[in-house]
Image 1 (cartoon, rainbow over the protein chains, first blue to last red):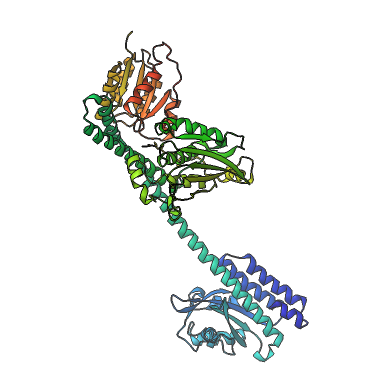
Image 2: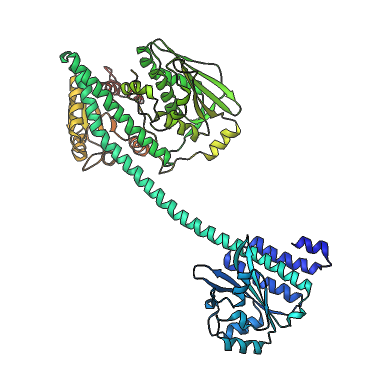
Length: 476
Length: 139
């Protein structure tokens, strides 16, 4: 709008300056109270500077809940002061019900255009007693009242009331344009202030809700921790006594009894792992897992894990190969990635038949180091790949394998969560059923941008963070 | 050669009797305590080569026992203290380590056979060397 004034006419620098002052309020003020008061005063100041004969300005806002127009701010002028001093109803309580359709303020909003009058009572009543208004107008010498509807983004906000000590016909075209411009800007300022007000309220409500959720989550974790501990005592007893039966009393067992005990043992181990996994997931999802970052050689870590699982691999005569070339170190929490390796290699061992092979390879990919765990096992059909990293997202034909080997169905979900905590990615690919599978995950290289970002942003240890429970892998 | 003396402080009956049986079978001299107070009084008498100390116990928990020992060391020396726990809560474990515990074992993770292996490690096998550093338990 200001632009059109510029190009069209000899509007003075003064006008621009005053428009700018108002715009400044619009741009700078987000405090509702402040915005409303300042805007009204600035507009009036500027109008005063221009010596147009404006006495007072009142800003009113639509109160949609109570269906009325309420006074919010009034300019700080002599006339205004006189009004305030003598008003029988306190300023903040003056309200005009929207049902008073003859009231000019209401009318301006309903019709969407400016209303003019020589009788202030047409604007101020029924909010104020008629006689009192007429009397005041006489005393103050107010000649004209103007009411502009205030709106922004096609929404009605309220009305701006001007009182002048000159007649309506003395208002020049130029003046009308300026008034309209001012009113438009006031509308925007108000809209902003209202938006911020509601934003703040929402923010506060969200904070309260958030805190409550955090508390509940913490209670849940404490509960889950205590429950897990309570669960473990009997589970440990079961596991240990079955072990005793299988080992100490080996010679006294019939093959049948041995089978019963072996299955019980596997089942209780599965139970223990499940409790551990659920505890871990509860902690990861609750944001209670911190990362203890350091520079780690993934080749060395892979070798450590392979040493751990070697006995199990040997039982199935599966070959474990690592690419031992030199690769850049990554930034990661060694324990967490150790768990990821255990999960992936453990899965590979589970799903690869005897005499198969598992290969661990690496590749640099920009700021990341990619780790690939490839097995020569049962493979995965393409339609099943998506389900892999979900909770309990098992593959249909894997139920037998899983049931017999004590897996929980949560391992990949946890691995994914851990890798993503490191700003990495994980996925799986397979040429098809019976043709092996490759799991790939990425971690940021130590000196890279991503690595530095991770160091900055990784969740740090606090009194609230907990470590992960270790799961055991079982391979049949 | 005199069998090594081990004190097992564990409040859960099944767990305690299981570990007692397994360690006795392995040739050790086992004494047990059923809670923190009981454990503390036996530790104070002293003379044990190894103490297996549970954390979650009634009357006095494992950490309180350790604290008491720090303030009032027993008259007769004891060997290492190893924490038995079912929680992987580092602050508890770290606190215990800072109070002189040499290592910790997670009960639900180890089989009875593995317990015996670890105990043998802690006791350094046949040698008199009580200062052998224990290795961290594998998962």
